[in-house]
Amino acid sequence: MTLLFRESWTEPGSELVPSARRLVRNALEQFWDGAPEEKYDDIELVTGELLANAVFYAKAPLTIEVNVDDDTVRIEVNDHSPDLLPPPPPQAALAETGRGLMLVALLSSSWGWEVDEHSKTIWVEFTHEPASS
Image 1 (cartoon, helix red, strand yellow):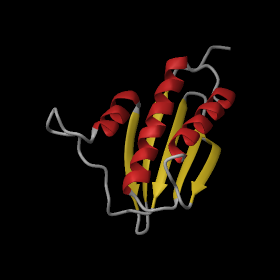
Image 2 (cartoon, rainbow, N blue to C red):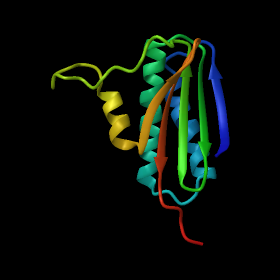
Image 3 (cartoon, rainbow, N blue to C red):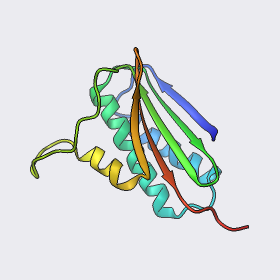
């Protein structure tokens, strides 16, 4: 995979999520050719969910990394809260939180997390069939 970009924020605030969503969308439209428009929409939405969770729950700094190849995009969001793992999906239909990760699971090809001593990385992958040449 090729690193498309990496961006870090030492003091993330509410403005981070919409600006990062636009950054990811613009980069993918420029460098990841051939995906259907809905795929870009899904990636933008999932990026926002992962970053919103990181801003709300985790410790800074936050880093987002976007890697691409012909048929896959991998987005990683890293924070400094290794002990704070993603919760399971909500059990109650009326739960007020937890739907963001349900969206991540529904819209992505795969997702998960990796933890080390100092940080946690939530990753998500999206795939599509590349256009024929």
